[in-house]
Image 1: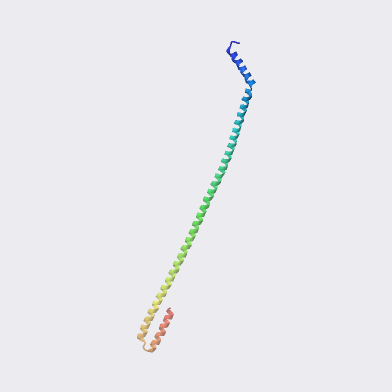
Image 2: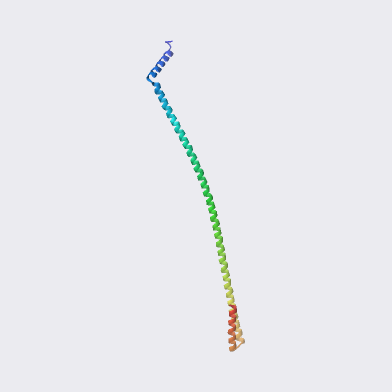
Length: 161
């Protein structure tokens, strides 16, 4: 048994463990492991905290995105409504403008017709006066004719104008 190398390896190992126990290596190893455990735990806690913060930020940005999307849709809808309102106002103004222009044109036409009718009446009256003057001056002679002619011309002018 003392001649076998495994025995001496075991004895050396036990002595080494005794020396380690006497020097306090086990406490140093345990302290180091405890520190490492604490550091890993702190890193895991930080990672969880960061993950939770990231999830909160993601939810907040999703909410903001949804709000912005709704606002954009509202803006588009209000712009469409405003455009339709402006188009209907423009159409109403155009119709009003056309109606006023038509009315103005009709009144100008009526005025021109009245003026033309007055001009025709005046020309007819002048022609009638001239014809009456010519006929009366040829058929009636003297001062009676002149009196009669003046009264007739005045009457015709009054009635025709």
